[in-house]
Length: 179
Image 1 (cartoon, rainbow, N blue to C red):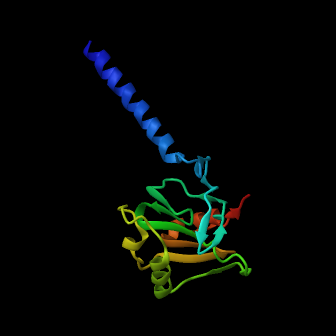
Image 2 (image 1 turned 135 degrees about the vertical axis):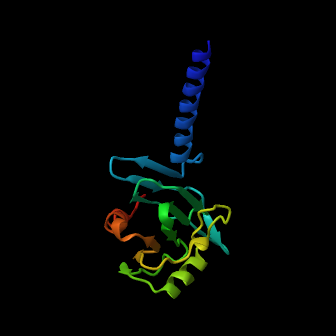
Image 3 (image 1 turned 120 degrees about the vertical axis):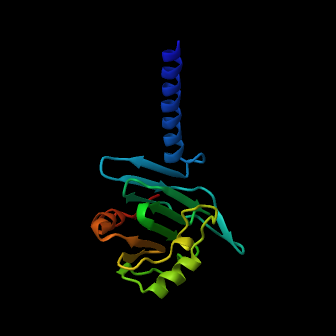
């Protein structure tokens, strides 16, 4: 009887873990979806919630991006800001700006100064309730930081270790808008 109780407990624990993984990978409102592939995660954001500014209406930018595996935590704020937090305080942060779509912007990649990163992070929206929060992490010396601008989207790779940088950068370059 004791063995049966132990076995039942183990099965119940394993089932609850798989349910938790499913909750982690898909949001309830279906706006966000993370699919796991052998070498990366594919994050898709497609929202039907209309944003407004004064009397103008804007639709959030729908996109997909490949991300490294082993996300410790992630957050999505107002369909415009997305933070993906990894071990060793490594962060991929995506900020979309649907309010300034009239003027085309040139895609660019640059290495930001510490001041540029701090100003950028100050303007990012976060939940503030997460122990993993880009505003609490700060810039770590001897780590790589890079900013990619693609249209009205800014992607910040923050505090990426030298050993991880090539893989992270290769994956986030996959960013593309979707319909």
